[in-house]
Length: 175
Length: 442
View 1 (tube, chains in turn blue, red):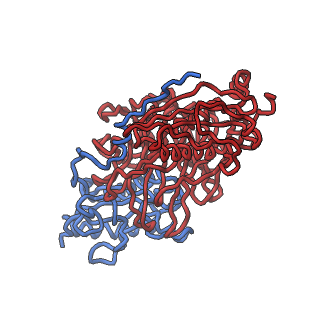
View 2: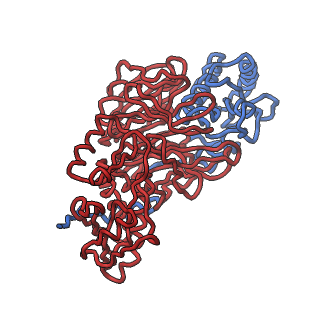
View 3: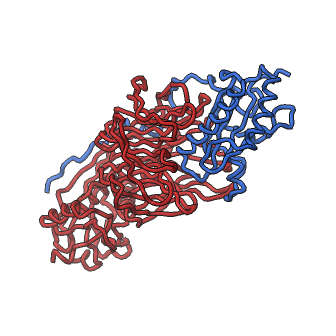
């Protein structure tokens, strides 16, 4: 019986695989940088602390910062429109404040679909605000998919809270 | 005598493919036929490999354990433990006393020897058909460094698997995944990579930025993933050793759901700008891009066919998430899923014969497989969340992640045969999700 050399394993592959992070060519800090601490944690908008967990109103107001959606939908309910009208009123009185709309989904859908669904929800809010006179360039949108739930029980009472779009004031409130 | 060695182990092959093992069986008496049906694992013995030098004793023992764990983990083979052995292999080149092994009903016998010289090791092995008292194939030798000792064991196990099933193996391979920790509402996620069996796990990002859905290239050299490190979610490309991280798609809007083509020259992904999401293809520089779908619905989770000619993806254009196939340059798409519920995350088998997917129906998540035309749908698993299948290099096994509910619930990675058998958790240090399996390593 002969022996054949069936494979010569390359040293470099394994050694390299055991090393940690190496050179990084990505510029950092160019994303959304928050001033209120709800986003832009560590100055990089790294996606932690998002979701408006800490506060649920616009700064210094009783106006809700979020609207909720039904399963798989990104259309705005009458209640959502009512909330957005209040937000728009506040935004009109505080014209210096740029905002970020975060779109979120519950965990009852697949991750990639929920990324797109969150984007659609944020987009729906932005489009409505723009239709009501808020300048487009004042509004950024971001999706967190199902990554940042505010409620984690495995039932509709929690899922309903997570299907949301949150308006985050990212700059000086102006007043 | 030949017939008595026949085994009909099941991985679930269509009849046309099952012919191949039959043809091979004429030359090779001991053969597990991977066909549809219920099966008893083939008993084998793998006595601790002989140490050619005293310093090789530990390596020999460890490598033997890897070979045994690979084979038994496949669900196709059952180890006869050393305590039951009558015979001993103390000289790799001495004649085998087959009666010692047939007496304990070992149908296959794996013998090996390990030689160590400094940081170099070499493993020789032979596979024997005990009842035919004959070798199965020629002896093989694999060489490498001591740090690569697990890979040497996987190589031996892949060769044994291939000779006994007629299929290529899947053990010498890697898996990219998300390593996660912390409560569900504030989960910390890191890009990570491990061997297929959970060994040699390393994290590649520091956890400061949220990262999602890594996709390991078939060669295991590069990983695509989505990161929030620049604010909005954006696709990054990183070397699998953690070096040279760069943005793949520096475009207006949010990009996610990337996948390599089999030849690693192209990437398909989703871009969300306003309402909905569309599918794009780019080269690896990210500069040459073209848009493949143009809808206001959600088109996402695209995946190339192994020949690169088609793309399967999910879309809610008909109202709910369903699977579609289109040419790799876009154009009209043909819906292939028509069952009850929602279908997501389609992944084309590397051998082209099946598409695996996530299905949500009746409030449960399932991993399933179907033919590329949508026929022969079969659900393999069910739980609160079972999601994100990825194919073993030989297209016979899937990994996916299963997430438990609640604040402290979290994901773990599992593997399952395409028959739905042999469900196993892949060991990881903490929560783990979104596995992405490479091809066999070179």
